[in-house]
Length: 337
Image (tube, rainbow, N blue to C red; front, side):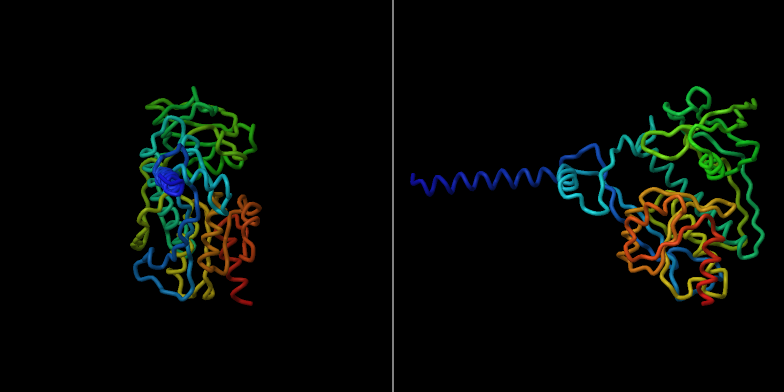
């Protein structure tokens, strides 16, 4: 056998091995998820308010895409550090003791609550009377590293935080997040027919840096909303509460004859509470990039996320906001100019 034939066989084997490794690297799973820029979705086709106005301007929600990481993803991201793509350990994404399917179901439930809160805020701002009632904040999961461990239990109902009655999970979260890490919150809790008074110190949990927490996952129990008109949503596979603020803006815009966008293409992010407070979110880098790709004119970002958003905004106009009134006032002032 000539040396040329032998060399060709060796080369063919090497190429074959490389090809097999390349294919396998795309299918061998890792314990990571890839977080990347998701969609920037115009909301007028997604949300339909009964007898609502249609306008030229646009509000867009922005989202983070998440998928399981294969070996190839792990190597590519660690070697090249592509903008907007990062690895996140699935074990850090999931609360202690919670399976992925349970987490997805919880996020879907939070999305539904976010839609209801957005409707309530928008209709109230448009001058309508909206009745909201609930039975408090239910504990879904207690994390072992928080101060709630050993004090709170699954299915406990929080009815007051620092003396303030709470009917919505988001209201409880915001009171706690307004504390500094290490400060305490006072809770009134129902456990069956028994009422408990607790005082728990806030801590910083792994995977949630900078945010005070007592270490619980919560949801609103038996919420009831009386909304004056029908509002239909087509949100498909989008889950989580972080689009609440732009949901509220789109609904409000359909309730008003004047186009509050001024004909602009406006994106944003942030949770929404019944009092109109816009709360911080995760994945701001990916959402900013999604908005840039969609060619938006303006991006509203929660105050807590503003400094991070500035790192990625480039020429995108950012506006820091605390609540829905900040957005409406900014749009009114700039549309009058």
